[in-house]
Amino acid sequence: MDIIQAIVLGIIQGIFEWLPISSEGQSMLILLNAFHMNVEEALSFAIFMHLGTSFAVMIKFWKEFRSILSGKDHKLTSIIVISTVCTGLTGLPLYFILKNTFTGGITATLLIGILLVLTGIILGLNKGKGHKTMDSVTRFDMIILGLVQGFAILPGISRSGVTLTTLLLRNVEQKTALVISFLISVPVVLGAVALDAGMIFTIDPLQGLALFLSSLLIGYLMMDFLMRFAERVDFSLFCISLGGLTIILAGGYYIL
Image (cartoon, rainbow, N blue to C red; front, side, top):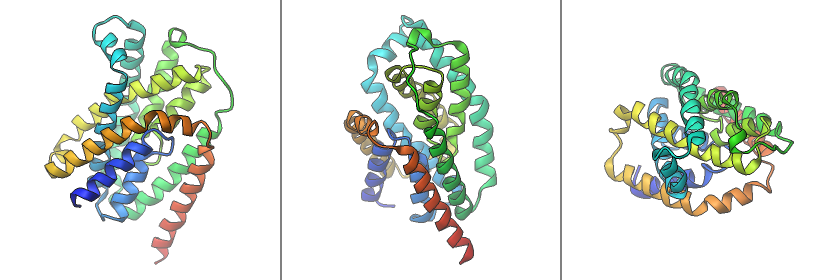
């Protein structure tokens, strides 16, 4: 991988992170099939690529994070802490299973296709509008949200898609759900990067810097635009179609 390719991957991450189509799934498909990485390497790269977009979230929502760090917003602090702990309960076991079970690129590609279809089905469940504000979010909502977010460690399961859908199904209003989904991503990504630090440190520093800066810049610039765009597109059908195509391609590799 050269610097230009690293920048292109960062741009892909910066765009797809805000869409409920699994940026991790798209990145791993490219890394597995175009760069012929093994699953462990591809997963480490995909996790690292989220670091730039997480910094974009911290920059955009710096007021909210400042309130959390200063101890002024107890409700938002509770949401982030409880959901993050519960994310670990589901995410950590799945992380180690994924690292140690799927060693072949074709197997992982097939898994990604299946999970993309599942993401599309989950997104299709979201049909109503909620009424809960930030102050109305309950501890049970936080626990369910965190447990569900843990499944997003699996490439093909969209973190933004499943967390937004969970919040909306729990009758949280759309704007509040969107803000919560953004904010709870940051500690999870930082935790995943720390957990995978051993592999991440093997990434070439120039490639890593290119990935980080391009995903941060594009993620920040495209955030508002892509969220408006997402409101007009049926991403459930998009995920199902993309997942189906991925399964067909993986099946073709098996046959060949």
